[in-house]
Amino acid sequence: MRHLLGRPIEDLTNRAVAVTDLFGPHAADLRERLREAPSWDARFAMIEAFVVPRVLGHTTLPAGVRCAWERLLGSGGRVAIGDLVDDTGWSQKHLITRFRHEIGLPPKLFARVLGFSRAIQAIRGGTARGLGDLAVQCGYHERHLWSFGTYSHAVPGEPSLFVEVRYDAGAAAVVWLTRAFGFVPGLQVAGDDGRVVHAELQLGDSVLMVNEAVAAPGHDRQAQHVYVAEPDAHHAGAVRAGATVVQPLADTPYGARGYCALDPEGFLWGFSTYRPTLV
Image (cartoon, rainbow, N blue to C red):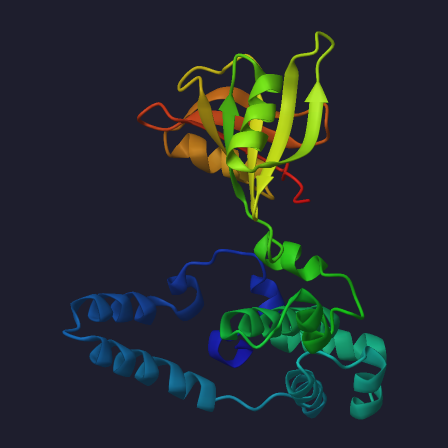
């Protein structure tokens, strides 16, 4: 990629850069021609004609970086940094610097991305018989499954969308829902007056949240709760899109951070870092 872009990848990491800043006015011309092309085959041919000369016109990766790259790809990320140091003959510091310069990520982080990619492929392809088997296949028995939260903001088997319903008599509702509909009681938090502040009922891999809290403006009987890993960025995007915020972005007493907003037709949505626990 550095050969294509003409600069170290690390200079572009986590940045949004206009294509004309990378390739100059030729990129603007290519964009217009792609828009006017009669078919996808024609578009791909234009892109290939634009990219290939830029890649072939540069030298290949340094031998040490290529060696580390191939070892990491071949092992799916399951190779120790010490082994890469031995293979390349470079010091660890020099290897990390050169690898980041050419690839855009240090070797260890690149290995974690490869492991995450293998896990996603195993899930989609159905080759893993369960999370335990997945952990063995992808090396997660050797390290925590943190990569799922880091790269996808979710962990396999954990939903992100939950329904919240508000009852006049929350405690009675929990008992009735359990008896009538087969929900399994989970976390229950009562206020000083005995009213249900928050209760979680599980059915399969889904969680229903029940409370008797004072309703926010909008649909006062039901709301949708969504887990988000980055509530500040999510809140900013919702505001830009015109959502009506009815509960400002804030930290909660139970350690989460989030906000509530109404959509254009008045339905209430809550977004926060809180995720109900499956039992």
